[in-house]
Image (cartoon, rainbow, N blue to C red; front, top):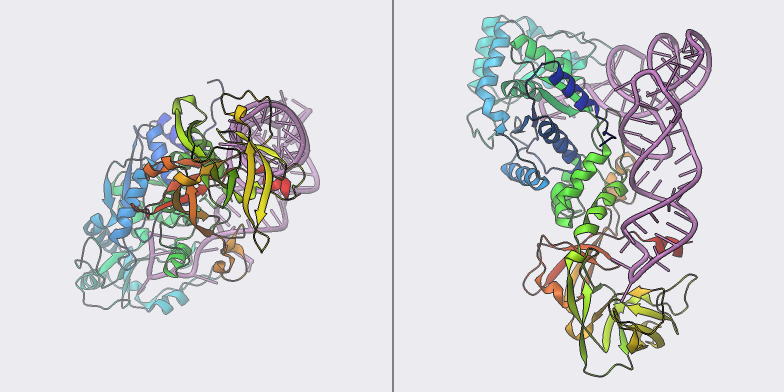
Length: 552
RNA sequence: UGGGAUGUAGUGUAACGGUAGCACCACAGAUUCUGAUUCUGUUUGUCUGGGUUCGAAUCCUAGCAUCCCAACCA
């Protein structure tokens, strides 16, 4: 390759560190808190952390940041592991911040011994008030000058369960006038009489994020601890604790998180959508969760490609959903089997075709010849798509219309001779005549038509439920709109087609299979399918230049 | 109004003192038994003002804009 892809700023840092001999190999980590499902934004972080280690010959740990027992749950631990594996990554070790609770407690004692931490009896309101504001310095707590011995005793009593939640906290003693709010004696331990998903009831004091994350990094010898931009102010505290504790110096680097159009990315908002029933669970195909995308039919490869294309930098970004969809279609176009399905049926009768006759026609399974062909039944009565007929054709229309000719995919050219309407004016039946010499792959008719439409043989059609998913929100950035973001949910984000007709080959569809329903989009079998009820999800539509033309 | 981070086409992302490039989107055309795919082409950009330099997106300087920080969340 003459043109080398340029490095992102983290790759540059890693290469410089390696070149300078700072490390012989790198260690990264992916540190989710098990209090929700992973979303597409996390996949950026996953691809980055695992990708860096892979590229530079290092390793990546999966470490659950489980320091807040009240919001965490093993259900989330399992889903997170499933999602990472599905994305195609393997962690070196599965670890938990809670594995280090004993060590972390010792670190806190060390800090107290050095006179760098103290127990504060103030209420949370008092602590907040004394903290000052970004423009005014804070004031020392009256408990700030307690002796080392007293602090040791008090912290030990906290651990022993002598106090109630919120009665006391342990704070680092730094500087109440610091310009960085996080350095104004941050709380590093709090009391929570809560059951922890792994340590059970062993502890009633739990370390705060700042006193767990960096220390866990250090314990694991993480060389490059990569997090998102909002943690920039935390880096000063991260470094301070490592220095005072005299432990392995991990370094924190920050990149801009992924934001994407037509969705929300905060766990709090996603949790609301789930809890308040706006979607059917974390893996609802409308959710931007990894499990949601998976269920909708996205491939892991397309998500990895997307993460590669969006790049890594430090400026806020807002990625077009269309880029993700582009990556998806690019992959699906290569692998999806082409089949025919009619979603909004209207009956078509070929008046000059022999009654009771059925032909088996060959049709290609995909653009690549290696995908082979299959046979599909064809006879006198077919379903076609209602929108493929126009009584009064629009400009540039080249599908069916009175007197117009069109090809039935892999079959014959037909001409529309008549149509029947019901009392409400809805078309109920189309009458066409076919041209016997125009059979696909053996066309001697000499007729060429502009349009080709798909169809399904009525007698052998399979019935299925098809879930047509669209974007969850009707505005690009629901989080930035005035009012509740839920007011901007797209009312048509899910439209269920109770009875669609499919060609018989779909009877053997499996969950992992990807299909293109010709001219309609990419679809996959949903896990709700049963032996007598097929359920398909629309993964994504095909690009549709006709609808643009029609709207002109 | 304290501190920190960031400003390159509509959206992302390169260019590391020497021709502002790539992708998505949009638009136009060709091909097509999927109005898909594929192929061709087009529009649009260095936050602003000064300065240094033969030459500045890049260096200096003064502004401006956006985001983050005052949970016993992470």
